[in-house]
Image 1: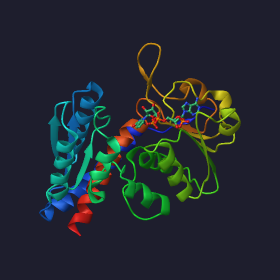
Image 2: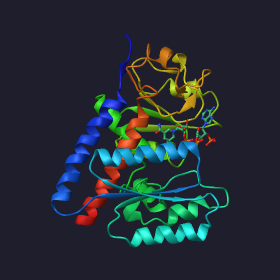
Image 3: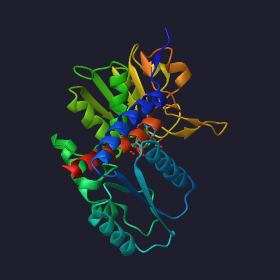
Amino acid sequence: MTAQIIDGKALAAEVRAEVAVRVAALRARGLQPTLAVILVGDNPASMTYVRHKGSDCESVGMRFVLDRYPADLAEAALLARIEALNADPSVHGMLVQLPLPKHIDTNKVIAAISPLKDADGFHVQSAGALMIGLPGFKPCTPYGCMRMLKAAGVDPKGKHAVVVGRSNIVGKPMALLLLQAHATVTICHSATPDLGAFTRQADILVAAVGRRRTITADMVKPGAAVIDVGMNQDEAGKLCGDVDFAGVREVAGSITPVPGGVGPMTRAMLLVNTVEAAERAAG
Ligand code: NDP
């Protein structure tokens, strides 16, 4: 039996429709939910991501403000711009598109963003809130993965979840969200010996590595829910995930495809965080 495909594109459309209703309610009260994005330099991938964020905002009736700066922008000037957006009551969510040029300290920049407007959920206060179970903005990718599990009817409670990858923006927050949902969680990384020995125990397997075919069919427990966060290129230069989709779909119970899985959901959850920021601002 082949796995149920968790359709991130369709689910993202559902999420956007929900956000659009919340945006309309705020607009009826005279508040225009707004996301501000700062883009430094002209990295082509970043430019594409930012363009998508703009069209996503437009599609749900949100205002999108884009601040573009040349790659040689001084760090102090960027920090000053963030301060100005922090103080601007017409802006509810903001983010600085990563990666930043090397002369700019990314941690310092993220720390400068008001935690009240932290649409990416990368601020240390958002991370801390997630760690101790307080309300706060969740990083969009793991937030979207949780929504995908829910849509597939997978309740993490009592399950063994294995997360491969321990980055601050995907692996660690993913593990914390699964823990919050009462899964027993294992985190694997590049120093984990015999990765398959761990992944084969997973009822829920999340791959967030950045290396194609890291997860093959022999590494998956029959019936497992497999979430593929990876964004890589295959031999033909086409987008692919960390999971060998063709093989693993024959073993897993449910699986997210790449493209059309976690990517669209990550974009949708940015809108959720932004509308939430606007709702909080509205009181
Ligand atoms: P990072 O490079 O920051 O983290 C990768 C993690 O994978 C690290 O923790 C690393 O371990 C671990 N790792 C590397 N090699 C192995 C291995 N052989 N076995 C086990 N673990 C390994 O990447 P991100 O977390 O930022 O992103 C992960 C992937 O997800 C990338 O492909 C990225 O493009 C994609 N991505 C997709 C998004 C989407 O919207 N679909 C959003 C964000 C990311 P260690 O810590 O020891 O180095």
